[in-house]
Amino acid sequence: MFPYITQAQDGKWQPGPYAGVELMVLHKDEATGGATVLRKFHAGTTIPAHTHRLTNETAYVLSGEWVESDVVHLPGTLFFAPKGTRHGPHHAKTEVISLTHFDGPLTLD
Image (cartoon, rainbow, N blue to C red; front, side, top):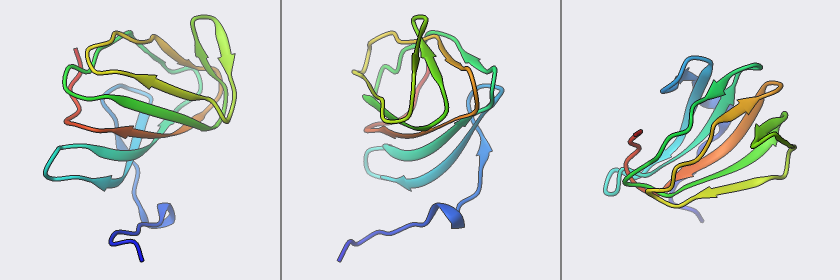
């Protein structure tokens, strides 16, 4: 049996680090500061290019149309940004839901 189980239906959306983005924390590792979250990007939201100095980011698109470098990515796309790597801008052509894991503390530069 898994030592930790959560249901998204029991979670609550909270404001994200940018306007037009909401997060639902599914799991947080208090020892590392890492977290697994659902992210909701409202349609038309653009996140500027940024860097996470202290964490690797893995994002899997569950629904919607995510635009990266003028290419539309659909559900089933996986993005990986190693810590210290500038990535973005990200644009939500439609509402986008992603399952995202940060393996360390979330910082934005």
